[in-house]
Length: 340
Ligand code: HEC
Ligand SMILES: [Cu+2]
Image 1 (cartoon, helix red, strand yellow):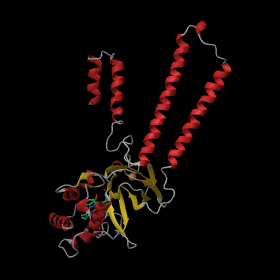
Image 2 (cartoon, rainbow, N blue to C red):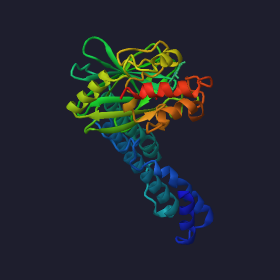
Image 3 (cartoon, rainbow, N blue to C red):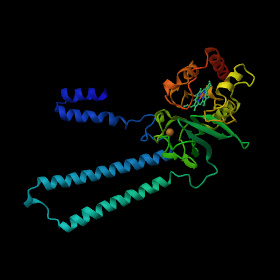
Image 4 (cartoon, rainbow, N blue to C red):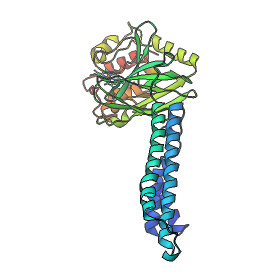
């Protein structure tokens, strides 16, 4: 759409030839990627992302300077009459311009790049860093916080951390290789089965930062989003206390229906892990979205997910419940919503 409007403007107002106008207009959506958005790596919100954005700009300006230099030399050679050209020995051109200059430029950028890359690693292993465990599944993120008593508190698709402090995300995968990426806070890190990778992130300010699986991992790879929320310390304590206390009352009606239909894949106590992989549903009511960013968690969303999740997120690992009658479904929804 935007490119069509630009095409019109280029042709009618600026008077550029149609072929050139189409070419220019085609670049407009690409340039849109440079605008600051919730997933823009060029709008850094933490030290690691700032390092990456700075590296990007250094690379950009260094490349731009080289392109200008080479274009200038090319034009000079093409446009000046031979008898008026400066005399430079061909050896100097080949060894200076062809070897020394590119080697110096590449080595300088390499050293700068390695230094920037090193500053993103979780070294030295820092006891002051806040620790959270994230396990990637097809196609959602399991999140576990230490509960302070040797156990864990489980949640999904939202990671709550303190702002202004290093956070070590201990990354695992339960099935295939996934990529953990919160562009405004840092680089990408693979989540690989059988290996724990650690990525250190930190946010300058409290805020909500969007993340996304960055390694193609199957049909619903694009609907594997993640919310990374940085809080002031006391806010975080409140959020984690709410998680620790979340979950529907054990004896509520609907508990038996829930256990029969959903219990093997979904724990509803924050301290328990489900037998088969499925998000812990204890703090479901606090989540912003369902299905790792598939639908907003608004009024009626749970019912909508239960009826239509295989249409909303085809092939996701939760079976379609065609045999679940309306009555049982309503009782399960009431049970889960009672966990507020
Ligand atoms: C075979 C395992 C399995 C069973 C049985 C199952 N689920 Fe799921 N459920 C999943 C998986 C896996 C996901 C993650 C889907 C995704 O986002 O890709 C999920 C996601 C959900 C979500 C979205 C959670 C979130 O925060 O995104 C809800 C709500 C949910 N299930 C409710 C239920 C209910 C209610 C039942 C019983 C009627 C049920 N599930 C039965 C595996 C299961
Ligand atoms: Cu993935």
